[in-house]
Amino acid sequence: MNWEALVPLIGIILIIFGVGVWAGKYVKSSNTFLDDYFLGGRSLGGFVLAMTMTATYGSASSFIGGPGTAYTEGLGWVLLAMTQVSTGYFVLMVLGKKFAIVTRKYNALTMVDFLKERYRSKWVVLISAFSIIVFLFSAMAAQWIGGARLIESLIGIPYTTALFIFAVLVLIYVVIGGFRAVALTDSIQGTIMFFGTLILLIATIIAGGGISNIISDLSAENPNLITPYGAEGTLTPAFVSSFWILVGVGVVALPQITVRAMSYKDSRSMHRAIIIGTIVVGVIMLNMHLIGVFARPILPGIEVGDRVMPLIALEVLPNWLAGIVLAAPMAAIMSTVDSLLLLVSSSIVKDVYLNYVEPKASHDRVKRLSIGVTAVLGVIVFLLALNPPDLIIWLNLFAFGGLQAAFIWPIVMGLYWSKGNKYGAIASMVTGVGLYILSDTFYPQPFGLHSVVLPVVVSFFAYVLVSLGTQDRHQVVKS
Image 1 (cartoon, rainbow, N blue to C red):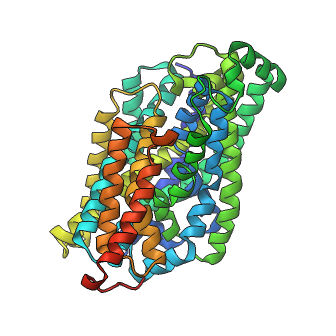
Image 2 (image 1 turned 180 degrees about the horizontal axis):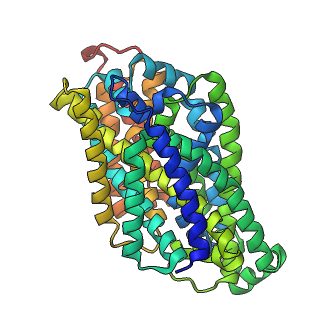
Image 3 (image 1 turned 135 degrees about the vertical axis):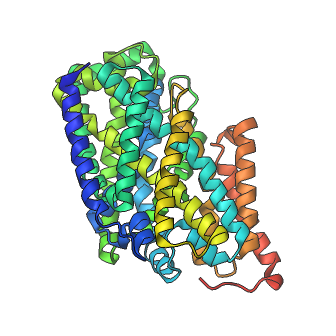
């Protein structure tokens, strides 16, 4: 067991746990429990908002799966990954003030709360909750696998044991603190990620003999590794461009991100978060994916791509520093898992149970149920993660696409187009999700594009045409 690397990692985790315990004191058993537990009391400042968006979005897919795929595909994947720079900007500019104002007016604690009040439809709520649960299980499995892979590589223990350790850490952490704990520790995690990835990139370049030497080695192995088209030439311009929807514009429809747009304190905080978030995401994504590519000449022949990051850190850094640097992806993974667990838990407790099963449930019962459901979900994801794929990024991107196909137009058009109604929302969600699953299963790259593009386009027309065609049967709800 690599104790030199393990001790700093444990130290960072203990700090995160300490913040979680402190934040847990704010989770009250009074009428504000749900608001505190799921939204942190809507009191996030600009820096915390930027970092919680960065750490939540920069998950196992970005820090474990992304570099692993870059290791396989070369510099073309770095170009593709940089479409993520626009994430925070799009989310806060598209949703921004209007979403915060409307969700406060509706007293909405979740994205589905907003959809429920905007469309006044039980079926919109149930389809939304179903979509969140189904697709976020895929995303959560990716995070748990990534966390276990990191612990497995760092400490040198079997994967199943590493997965169990990760599961225990996450469940304790999320249960005690809720959203406020997630948001505050994200500030620590985001800072570690920013500086940790920079240190690791510099060390990797030095170990490879400089950038020019690394590029020469990559070119000698496979000239395609230094082109925009990937190792096998599969990263076509159409496919890469379509990622602007999947990991750029479409991120506004991810529930784990949209909930951040409900939680900030004021306009100044939002504007500050746009600037900080864009810079931090850009630096981190560039660093992480370049590390993945540059690791290839230094550590050739890695079969499981998700192990590239921890292995290159242990190779080019002193063990103690590797432990600190690897706390960055570990922290990001914990943050994202916490957020996803809370989202699925809130969909079950708030969106289904309180709306349609027991609307008058006591606050103590809601609190016990919220914590209990979160714990049970964690156990289920643990079981799903026992048999992992070699690259988790495809699990995460599948979840991204499904959520975007379901929610992008009911959210965006629901905010900005008063004629949109429940019939249009239902048509958009059913069309988007159905077409996405069919496309991803039977025709993964229609017209050379990612499988999310066609469902997003078709679901837009479904929303508009069905809304317009049912105006005489539905009184428009003003947003």
